[in-house]
Amino acid sequence: MQITAEEMKKSIQKLYNMLEEVTPLDYDCGTLCNEVCCLYDEEDCPNKDLVLYLLPGEELMYENSKYFDLYYIDPKELDYPRSWKDEVFIVECNNPPHCDRKIRPIQCRTFPLIPHITKDGKFHLILDKNEFPYECPIIRDNIPLNEDFIQVTYKVWKILITNPNVHALIQFDSRRRDNKRKGYKIII
Ligand code: SF4
Ligand code: SF4
Image (cartoon, rainbow, N blue to C red):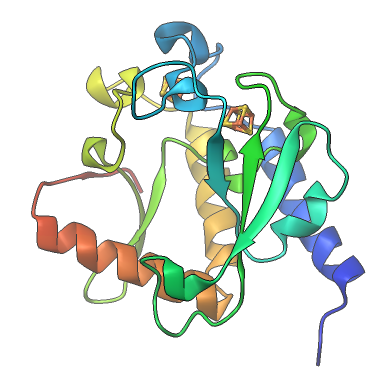
């Protein structure tokens, strides 16, 4: 049965609400790094064109937002699994690190935890410093994440990977990570 846009929006909102209740640390971790994950760009200067990849259905949250510009890309132009045929939506943050936090993407809400699927199919959340071009102090200094943040993030990703595109993408990224053999830390 085809899911309607309204139903899809509701299910994304439910995930946003779950993640709204938790934070990686008990204080704003942006104070540790001057919000580098919002502001970094390749020239190492404030990023006015920060782009975030959305998960399927999240694009519905960004229609008419003054904080974000919404675009789509043909998946053939990206390093994405071949099975992903739908458009890939991205948002650009207009005024980082300020944004409408009520609709910030799942990618931001679950950071710095990363979904990973092992070769034998087990799903984990990991920390991987090789994944980002900047240094996240939580990873660098082994700062323990709040347990409720880990648990809720795990629950949310378990729901997200029921979407075959999301599952394929995580598997694709996980094999690439394994091939790099640079090591990562399993959190759950
Ligand atoms: S997640 Fe890491 S890089 Fe991002 S604001 Fe927190 S400490 Fe900084
Ligand atoms: S959506 Fe908000 S929290 Fe996420 S990177 Fe952009 S400015 Fe930062």
